[in-house]
Image 1 (cartoon, each protein chain N blue to C red):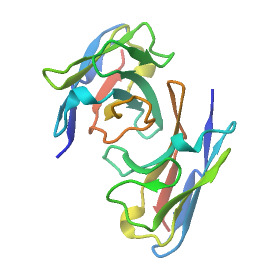
Image 2 (cartoon, chains in turn green, blue; image 1 turned 90 degrees about the horizontal axis):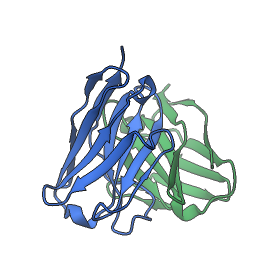
Image 3 (cartoon, each protein chain N blue to C red; image 1 turned 180 degrees about the vertical axis):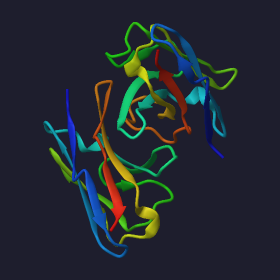
Image 4 (cartoon, chains in turn yellow, orange; image 1 turned 45 degrees about the horizontal axis):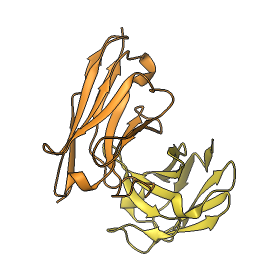
Amino acid sequence: EIVLTQSPGTLSLSPGERATLSCRASQSVNSDYLVWYQQKPGQAPRLLIYSTFSRAAGFPDRFSGSGSGTDFTLTISRLEPEDFAVYYCQYYDSSLYTFGQGTKLEIK
Amino acid sequence: EVQLVESGGGLVHPGGSLRLSCIVSGFKFSNYWMHWVRQVPGKGLVWVSRINLDGSSATYADSVKGRFTISRDNAKDTLYLQMNSLRVEDTGLYFCGRDDSSGIQGWFDPWGQGTLVTVSS
Protein backbone atom coordinates (compact mmCIF):
# COMPACT_ATOMS: atom_id res chain seq x y z
CA GLU A 1 0.00 0.00 0.00
CA ILE A 2 1.31 3.39 -0.98
CA VAL A 3 1.82 5.97 1.75
CA LEU A 4 1.86 9.68 0.95
CA THR A 5 3.89 11.95 3.22
CA GLN A 6 3.35 15.69 2.97
CA SER A 7 5.79 18.29 4.16
CA PRO A 8 5.94 20.57 5.90
CA GLY A 9 3.05 19.98 8.26
CA THR A 10 2.57 23.71 8.61
CA LEU A 11 3.94 26.44 6.37
CA SER A 12 3.88 30.04 7.58
CA LEU A 13 4.22 32.61 4.83
CA SER A 14 3.10 36.12 4.00
CA PRO A 15 0.88 37.23 1.12
CA GLY A 16 2.94 37.75 -1.99
CA GLU A 17 5.45 35.05 -1.09
CA ARG A 18 5.95 31.77 -2.95
CA ALA A 19 4.71 28.54 -1.39
CA THR A 20 6.16 25.13 -2.13
CA LEU A 21 4.36 22.10 -0.73
CA SER A 22 5.74 18.58 -1.01
CA CYS A 23 4.06 15.18 -1.36
CA ARG A 24 6.30 12.14 -1.27
CA ALA A 25 5.09 8.63 -2.12
CA SER A 26 6.49 5.51 -0.48
CA GLN A 27 7.04 4.02 -3.93
CA SER A 28 6.95 5.24 -7.50
CA VAL A 29 3.43 6.14 -8.62
CA ASN A 30 1.61 6.87 -11.86
CA SER A 31 1.51 10.65 -12.18
CA ASP A 32 -1.86 10.43 -13.95
CA TYR A 33 -3.46 9.65 -10.60
CA LEU A 34 -1.76 12.14 -8.31
CA VAL A 35 -4.04 15.02 -7.30
CA TRP A 36 -4.19 17.93 -4.89
CA TYR A 37 -7.14 19.37 -2.96
CA GLN A 38 -7.61 22.64 -1.14
CA GLN A 39 -9.71 22.72 2.02
CA LYS A 40 -10.74 25.87 3.83
CA PRO A 41 -12.19 25.84 7.38
CA GLY A 42 -15.76 24.60 7.48
CA GLN A 43 -15.71 23.63 3.82
CA ALA A 44 -15.37 20.44 1.83
CA PRO A 45 -12.13 19.71 0.02
CA ARG A 46 -12.04 21.13 -3.48
CA LEU A 47 -10.14 19.57 -6.37
CA LEU A 48 -7.20 21.83 -7.21
CA ILE A 49 -4.76 19.86 -9.38
CA TYR A 50 -5.35 16.54 -11.16
CA SER A 51 -2.98 14.25 -13.00
CA THR A 52 -0.04 16.01 -11.31
CA PHE A 53 -0.09 19.07 -13.57
CA SER A 54 -3.63 19.99 -14.64
CA ARG A 55 -5.37 22.80 -12.85
CA ALA A 56 -9.05 22.34 -12.00
CA ALA A 57 -11.66 24.82 -13.09
CA GLY A 58 -11.84 28.00 -11.08
CA PHE A 59 -8.27 28.09 -9.86
CA PRO A 60 -5.90 30.78 -11.12
CA ASP A 61 -2.61 30.09 -12.81
CA ARG A 62 -0.58 31.00 -9.73
CA PHE A 63 -1.28 27.39 -8.70
CA SER A 64 0.85 24.76 -10.40
CA GLY A 65 1.69 21.11 -9.88
CA SER A 66 4.79 19.17 -10.83
CA GLY A 67 6.66 15.98 -10.12
CA SER A 68 7.13 12.37 -11.06
CA GLY A 69 8.07 9.06 -9.52
CA THR A 70 7.88 9.55 -5.77
CA ASP A 71 8.19 13.34 -5.45
CA PHE A 72 5.43 15.79 -6.23
CA THR A 73 5.10 19.50 -5.58
CA LEU A 74 2.32 22.04 -5.39
CA THR A 75 3.55 25.57 -5.96
CA ILE A 76 1.66 28.79 -5.36
CA SER A 77 3.67 31.50 -7.04
CA ARG A 78 2.39 34.56 -5.19
CA LEU A 79 0.17 33.96 -2.22
CA GLU A 80 -3.15 35.72 -2.00
CA PRO A 81 -5.08 35.97 1.29
CA GLU A 82 -7.65 33.43 0.04
CA ASP A 83 -4.94 30.79 -0.54
CA PHE A 84 -4.35 30.16 3.15
CA ALA A 85 -5.89 26.74 3.71
CA VAL A 86 -5.02 23.08 4.14
CA TYR A 87 -3.75 21.22 1.09
CA TYR A 88 -3.96 17.47 0.63
CA CYS A 89 -2.39 15.24 -1.98
CA GLN A 90 -4.13 12.03 -2.96
CA TYR A 91 -3.30 8.99 -5.08
CA TYR A 92 -5.43 6.33 -6.73
CA ASP A 93 -4.21 2.84 -7.49
CA SER A 94 -6.14 -0.39 -8.00
CA SER A 95 -9.26 0.57 -6.06
CA LEU A 96 -7.26 2.16 -3.26
CA TYR A 97 -7.44 5.87 -2.61
CA THR A 98 -4.74 7.28 -0.34
CA PHE A 99 -4.44 10.77 1.10
CA GLY A 100 -1.48 12.58 2.53
CA GLN A 101 -1.88 14.01 6.01
CA GLY A 102 -2.11 17.57 4.73
CA THR A 103 -0.10 20.78 4.84
CA LYS A 104 -1.59 23.76 6.61
CA LEU A 105 -0.65 26.99 4.87
CA GLU A 106 -1.02 29.79 7.40
CA ILE A 107 -0.48 33.52 7.34
CA LYS A 108 2.77 34.60 8.95
CA GLU B 1 -25.18 23.94 -10.54
CA VAL B 2 -23.78 20.63 -9.38
CA GLN B 3 -24.68 19.94 -5.75
CA LEU B 4 -24.23 17.05 -3.33
CA VAL B 5 -26.01 17.26 0.01
CA GLU B 6 -25.38 14.71 2.74
CA SER B 7 -27.64 13.93 5.67
CA GLY B 8 -28.27 11.27 8.28
CA GLY B 9 -25.36 11.84 10.62
CA GLY B 10 -25.72 11.96 14.38
CA LEU B 11 -24.66 10.59 17.74
CA VAL B 12 -24.74 6.84 18.12
CA HIS B 13 -23.45 4.36 20.69
CA PRO B 14 -20.74 1.85 19.79
CA GLY B 15 -22.35 -1.11 18.08
CA GLY B 16 -25.17 1.02 16.71
CA SER B 17 -26.21 1.81 13.16
CA LEU B 18 -26.74 4.85 10.97
CA ARG B 19 -27.75 5.39 7.37
CA LEU B 20 -26.23 8.31 5.52
CA SER B 21 -27.74 9.81 2.39
CA CYS B 22 -26.30 12.02 -0.32
CA ILE B 23 -28.81 13.70 -2.64
CA VAL B 24 -27.35 15.11 -5.83
CA SER B 25 -28.55 17.63 -8.38
CA GLY B 26 -27.23 19.43 -11.42
CA PHE B 27 -25.92 16.34 -13.20
CA LYS B 28 -27.08 12.94 -14.38
CA PHE B 29 -26.40 10.85 -11.27
CA SER B 30 -26.57 7.50 -13.06
CA ASN B 31 -23.60 8.46 -15.22
CA TYR B 32 -21.12 8.74 -12.36
CA TRP B 33 -19.39 6.44 -9.91
CA MET B 34 -19.70 7.76 -6.39
CA HIS B 35 -17.68 7.64 -3.16
CA TRP B 36 -17.79 8.20 0.56
CA VAL B 37 -14.80 9.78 2.34
CA ARG B 38 -14.37 10.35 6.09
CA GLN B 39 -12.55 13.16 7.85
CA VAL B 40 -11.87 13.12 11.56
CA PRO B 41 -12.40 16.73 12.70
CA GLY B 42 -9.10 18.55 12.57
CA LYS B 43 -7.42 15.56 10.97
CA GLY B 44 -6.92 14.05 7.56
CA LEU B 45 -9.04 12.28 4.98
CA VAL B 46 -9.75 8.57 4.62
CA TRP B 47 -11.50 6.96 1.68
CA VAL B 48 -14.35 4.70 2.77
CA SER B 49 -16.20 3.22 -0.19
CA ARG B 50 -17.15 3.55 -3.84
CA ILE B 51 -19.98 2.27 -6.04
CA ASN B 52 -20.34 1.81 -9.77
CA LEU B 53 -22.97 3.27 -12.06
CA ASP B 54 -25.84 0.84 -11.48
CA GLY B 55 -24.92 -0.20 -7.96
CA SER B 56 -23.89 -3.72 -8.92
CA SER B 57 -20.31 -3.33 -7.73
CA ALA B 58 -18.90 -1.78 -4.55
CA THR B 59 -15.46 -1.48 -2.98
CA TYR B 60 -14.63 -0.78 0.65
CA ALA B 61 -11.69 0.22 2.78
CA ASP B 62 -10.52 -2.68 4.92
CA SER B 63 -11.50 -0.80 8.08
CA VAL B 64 -15.20 -0.86 7.17
CA LYS B 65 -15.50 -4.06 5.13
CA GLY B 66 -18.31 -6.24 6.41
CA ARG B 67 -19.84 -3.42 8.47
CA PHE B 68 -20.69 -0.71 5.94
CA THR B 69 -22.75 -1.03 2.76
CA ILE B 70 -22.81 1.54 -0.01
CA SER B 71 -25.80 1.69 -2.33
CA ARG B 72 -27.56 4.05 -4.69
CA ASP B 73 -31.02 4.78 -6.05
CA ASN B 74 -30.59 6.32 -9.48
CA ALA B 75 -34.31 7.10 -9.72
CA LYS B 76 -33.98 9.26 -6.61
CA ASP B 77 -30.51 10.67 -7.41
CA THR B 78 -29.39 9.46 -4.01
CA LEU B 79 -26.32 7.70 -2.66
CA TYR B 80 -26.43 5.83 0.65
CA LEU B 81 -24.05 4.47 3.26
CA GLN B 82 -25.48 1.96 5.71
CA MET B 83 -23.17 1.87 8.72
CA ASN B 84 -23.54 -1.06 11.13
CA SER B 85 -21.55 -2.22 14.15
CA LEU B 86 -20.20 1.29 14.54
CA ARG B 87 -16.97 1.85 16.42
CA VAL B 88 -15.52 4.92 18.11
CA GLU B 89 -12.95 5.13 15.33
CA ASP B 90 -15.71 5.56 12.74
CA THR B 91 -16.33 9.03 14.13
CA GLY B 92 -15.90 11.78 11.57
CA LEU B 93 -17.37 14.01 8.94
CA TYR B 94 -18.59 11.90 6.05
CA PHE B 95 -18.42 13.40 2.58
CA CYS B 96 -19.86 12.03 -0.61
CA GLY B 97 -17.82 12.69 -3.73
CA ARG B 98 -18.32 12.27 -7.44
CA ASP B 99 -15.99 10.26 -9.67
CA ASP B 100 -16.47 10.01 -13.42
CA SER B 101 -18.32 7.56 -15.67
CA SER B 102 -15.50 5.05 -15.85
CA GLY B 103 -14.65 4.79 -12.17
CA ILE B 104 -10.96 5.06 -12.92
CA GLN B 105 -10.61 8.82 -12.89
CA GLY B 106 -9.07 8.52 -9.45
CA TRP B 107 -10.26 11.69 -7.82
CA PHE B 108 -13.36 13.27 -6.34
CA ASP B 109 -14.97 16.34 -7.81
CA PRO B 110 -17.05 17.82 -6.41
CA TRP B 111 -17.68 16.93 -2.77
CA GLY B 112 -20.68 17.51 -0.59
CA GLN B 113 -20.47 19.53 2.62
CA GLY B 114 -20.46 16.46 4.82
CA THR B 115 -22.54 14.99 7.62
CA LEU B 116 -21.08 14.40 11.09
CA VAL B 117 -21.11 10.96 12.66
CA THR B 118 -20.15 10.68 16.31
CA VAL B 119 -19.77 7.25 17.87
CA SER B 120 -19.53 7.51 21.61
CA SER B 121 -20.84 5.87 24.74
